[in-house]
Amino acid sequence: MSSDVAIADIVRSTVNTRRITERKVADIRVVTNRLRILALNALIEAKRAGDMGRGFSVVADEVKGISAEVETLSGQLSQELVGEINQLERLTRDMAEQAQGTRMIDLALNAIELIDRNLYERTCDVRWWATDTAIVDAAAQPSREACDYAGHRLGVILDAYTVYLDIWLIDLDGRVIANGRPDRFQAAGHSVADRPWFAQSKRLLDGNAYTVNDIDQEHLLRGAQVATYATGVREGGAANGRLIGVLAVHFDWEPQAQTIVSGVRMSPEEAQRTRVMLVDGKGRVIAASDRSGILTERFRLETNGKASGHYHDAFGNLVAYHHTPGYETYRGLGWHGVIVQKAEAPAQSAPMRRSA
Image (cartoon, rainbow, N blue to C red; front, top):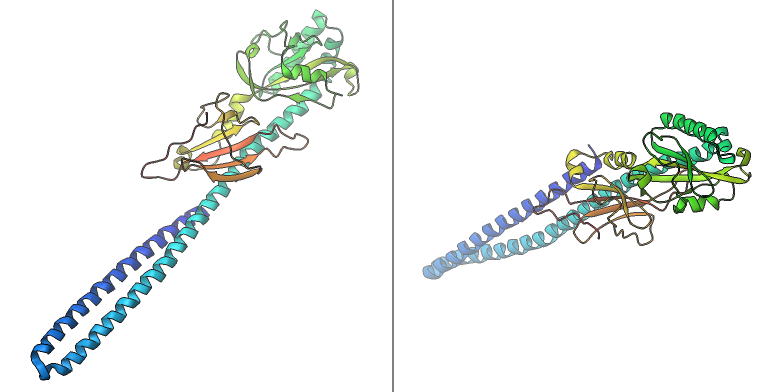
């Protein structure tokens, strides 16, 4: 049995105890009212009996007094016991919300960690492949034969690394001179000098450095969503060699990210009321389990400067988040794993919030 189920059982038990207590206190009050009425009737009869009923009158007064004491005790019991049960119910519900919030934070962390580890590998790949002899030779002397062979080598790499859409070798003017999948993408000959990652790559200090931009759509890749990692190709393949070109790898973002946000472990019922997202540093949704708002929606996350946490939004939805922790030498791009969950089986469910 999970901790969440155990807490839910406690909540139900507490609610039942409060109802039983309220019902029993009400029963006691019914009995005391009957005693009070009985005592009143006895006093009336004692008055009628005169001297013969004085003894009975004393008994009736005593019964009346006892009923008053019982009424007082039942009132105190109701006030104190029900008050304590209500407090216990609140504490238990708070505990349940805290446990669920912590669990959602862990799931958000798991999602962002998975993508960080995946993208760390991309930073290693692009720097390694930029030292390949065929790539270096084509960048140094971009003859037709050298560029064709470089494209062939890039194709071999792509056959083994299916997470990439394409790999481009680019000259210092920003013109693609070779790509690994020319049969699918006619990138060769096109200029990418206006791409931010290209300009950034030309400013890198050595071959150990790389650059990356947030997720974008690349029209030379038929509008596919990509994470592009780039580095300089350097003379002789040496890390401190003169810059002679740029190598860019295009990570096939959408299917990889969708696998992560859709693969968060939870029950089918819970999944139906939960939205898992990856959000970039500007609040833009870059992946979502419901496949909506990707690259168009901006999610207003209320972190208050904290790396992780959870809160309830204006609609009562639980929002849990975790900032990218990075992996190894990859610091990440300031992204967040975010989970938005509606309350469980409400009478009228609150709408799941969408940000403008």
